[in-house]
Length: 67
Image 1: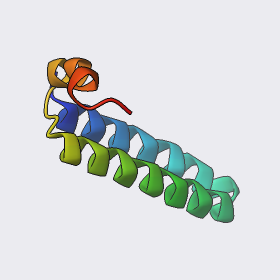
Image 2: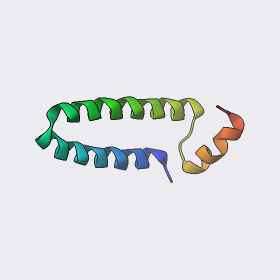
Image 3: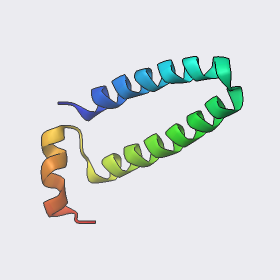
């Protein structure tokens, strides 16, 4: 239920996909890495600004801080 752990497992999974892609197309791997880093950084910054640590906090955060 902790978002930090979920994001860590997601990052490990994406690294596995990038390891497979680098064999076939290194430029695509670099593009994939840049896009994933950009998206992950944006998500971390949003969660940090909302002080979200667990999924239960995230589910109720929209009532306190609407988009």
